[in-house]
Image 1 (spheres, protein in one colour):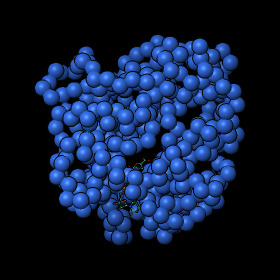
Image 2: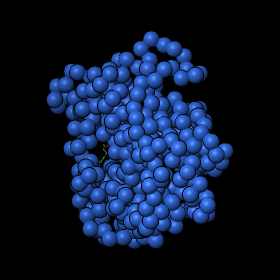
Image 3: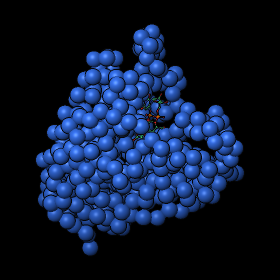
Amino acid sequence: MLKIEENVMIKNLVTMRIGGPAKFVITVTDKEDIPEAYKFAKERNLPVWVLGGGANTFSKDEGFEGVIILDRIMGISQIETPAGEEEKEGVAYFKAYGGEQWDDLVTYVSERGFSGIEAMAGIPGTAGAAPVQNIGAYGQEVTQVIVSVEAYDTKLEKFVVVPASEMKMSYRKSIFNSGENVGRYFIYSTTVRVEKGQLNPPFYRSLQAYVDEHGETDFSPLNIARMVKEVRNSKLPDPEKIASAGSFFKNVYLTDEEADEAEARGIQVWRNAKEVGPDSPEKRTNLVNSGWLIEEAGLKGKVFHGMKVSDKAALILINESAESYADLAAAREEIAKIVFDKFGFKIEQEPDEIEA
Ligand code: EPU
């Protein structure tokens, strides 16, 4: 039996706490629920939106005249070497069903001494959502470890395996959130490839700073995961307590010529940034931190229409008292305009909006 609710406020499903009513919300807890939920939507001619933890999503005030499917399918395990992957000493494969918290997969894998996702500890959201926007942090990205997902293909109306090679991942992007196949796949499970071992210094800037400050010498996956979570906790708001959607703006990526020009204007540019997926069509690996731009524009701690630019991490917008999407949009436009007027870069919203 499907769990179906009607007229649910999206603001109650997402960490940013912004969004109007959804016509239906269906919670799926089993594989069999997935085709049924899509059938329910199809019979009523309604669009579908799949939601994991709601950590990176909100909607407009008019809400969503459709069906939101909440993925609550659970389970994490180490699996046999999948077909097409080579058997190799020290390499292991782990599978998480889409409703699991991504961080629980990180802990499960790190506890067993496998390296590859430990720097992505503490990222809010589910294992099913992780490949959608190719999450990344502290120098690791999902694209580096993803093997495949099992997905319900709504076009073929059956379960399929989508291999990493078909995901077209780049910075915060994949076929699951951009291009012609958006909405086609419901990610049922995510499989990653990890290796016995550990990361070695130098680490990503802010992690390295923590290591230096605390004289850390244990770089085991579990200890890296712990350190990353401490770094995150010191800067990023806990979505359980404070309304936000994580980084509100994307970072800015530049071509080499653009980077030269920006540096000549005194802008901080990171060359060969690690966090762009290898398949990035742009191959723009020069990164300007939007957090830096916002901070340099003097906006840390400033409040726009109830949305506060975090005083700890300028890329984070905290919903202090915004009532509506209109407030959020006004804040977004004002911040982006100030940054554009000062630096000439258009910064873009990073989280997703639920829409038909
Ligand atoms: N910076 C500032 N002021 C700030 C924040 C950042 O000047 O207030 C500059 C500093 O130079 C700092 C640099 O930006 O060294 C990098 O900051 P940080 O390491 O915090 O990373 P970020 O670029 O702000 C990205 C991701 C985060 C991820 C971190 C760590 C995006 C949009 N955000 O942020 O992801 O946790 O790197 O790897 O790519 C998210 O997507 O929701 C998210 C939190």
